[in-house]
Image (cartoon, rainbow, N blue to C red):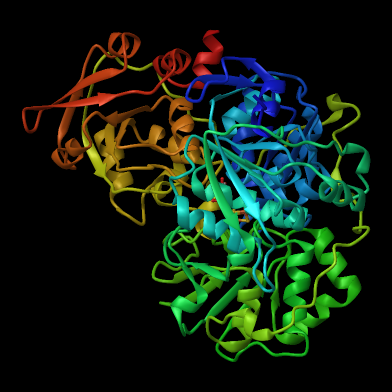
Length: 640
Ligand code: MIC
Ligand code: SF4
């Protein structure tokens, strides 16, 4: 029986465990990446481990999220990140150099390698044939220290691509089609592996758009084979020697299968407020648009923006639309500047931002009250844009650009003939904004600004937890609900006491105060609790606020791991209907915790308010039980 590509790469990196879907495995990590919003915490954790130099083949620290410097905080964090990188053997990509995933694809990604990143969109690297996985900062810190990465052996889902995309239909429409079919929880516990005759028609940046938004499926990762297209991309980046050919065996088997005929796709839109609320542009009819934002790690490559420039050439943005463009990297921006395309964007009336995440994470460009914003981004969770009542629609660059001219959601197929955008034979290569680690680390002093506060640590799990349900939430709660981002809150990522005031703030402004007063508490959730970002702050802050248990119908992968890492006990309802019987304010008690956790997976909680019993389960591996009992991964590692 032939092997699929995913299993080949996992097999080549397997440290412990058996490659049986659902079993815990550990894999060796070749490369790591961090970004500034999660990186500061990750490096504080790395420093706490007392390891003199990173042990990976390559570790890169990017600054791309916190670039709106409205106070000293972000610049302080950048300085910390630069000095800590120099000292511990990490490459440092300076602010302005671009979005981590775009730059990593251009300059560092290597087919067949494993990449662990403290950002949920790390699977962008799957476009190059890497096994690239997003994780919490603590897991990335452990990997930098040479530790393996523990994960549940995923099922491998094959998406077979047939045919070729019609004119004006793009990679974004492919992944929106996958989201339409599988939903935001359809990928949990799975890796999506693309194959088939349609693959060769997609460039590496197009493949990366697809693997990037695999994160929105909840998938562990997504991957494309490494073929001649990959080779010419790497050659154009001056890195052809890093190319290896990789593909599934001809007779490879998969756990699930999906077929997509590219030639039958049409321009799609993800409607508010979920990336899987997908409709066709046609179906939506005339929708007046107030803002168009082009960029993010999903759709800000050179070819994406060249297509936008072609559509805008000689035209003007509609009077009622604000068009904003953030190129994905300095390479992209400089190439557009040198070939004149940037002038076309400016002449058309676009507002050009620096190469960074920007509006994608609410760092500026919040839309007007009640506005409709079309974005080429990957997430449209409520409030993420910075405006609570804005309606964000996710679209391809072509739909975005054409709509910016029209003033309403418009189908680019009306433009007629499409000029094919050629991949450059040679990208403009200038790595001068990527600073290598110091030759002599002993000369480097790590600089910490006043925004960097000590790392809160948990205590051992008590034998009995008796605590009130402080919050009850619905299905698909995102980490943006739990720990919002945006221009006001994101600068506080390295200051947990200050950050904690904003936990769940959009859902329940009193939550933080209530938790602080109670001293300990429980959260009750629905399905797919914690979907979205990798931010460990969505576990760290609730831990800081005294949350001991999250009892939900099901969890998203990265958030589940983050809860364990910080010693919060994640439990699932044995009978989903019990969700209806537990309310905010109910007092729950669970005793003999250690023996209940060690001797099986079933637990019993007493509802002291109603006098009834709630049966729950845990999906923890023996290693995770030990981590929970120790009060989190840092304590556990110290004990070892
Ligand atoms: C996001 O897109 O939500 C982020 C901001 O990039 C996060 C990381 C973070 O919260 O710092 C992610 O996707 O992991
Ligand atoms: Fe940055 Fe947005 Fe990509 Fe997250 S999804 S890494 S915020 S561009």
